[in-house]
Image (cartoon, rainbow, N blue to C red):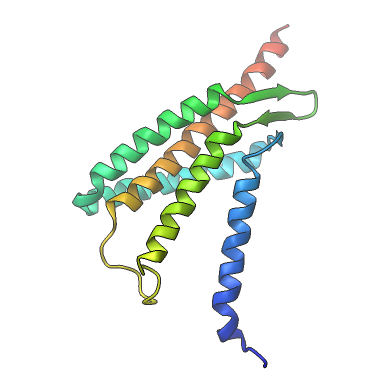
Length: 168
């Protein structure tokens, strides 16, 4: 039995999404090398995503409480996570070790919400739902707010030891 490319598209898309989630979850554990350019690109994309969420909250008035609450919760979790992140400045590069419980919990939140929507039939019709869910927007705002605050804070923490050693 030979499958054509259009018949394999859902399988390939699912495998690709699975690979993205695997990489995202794997990056929550263990010592990580800090890459300034990659971090700056990620912060730029997250800033655009936050602007899109704010625009969505303005255009869809029924989701603004979710976006606001999610953004505040995400920012608070980001500040909490920064306090539990270990930064190791080295001569050639900087390394950090994120708290695995915080990143793991946020990854499970995202996967849980996707599974809930999938079980409810949100993706079965082939067409996106016409009504934006306030809960989905809140979870998206939580994740974007967390990664934005965490990325900015991590950048500041890594630069701080370098500036202190330059003075000495």
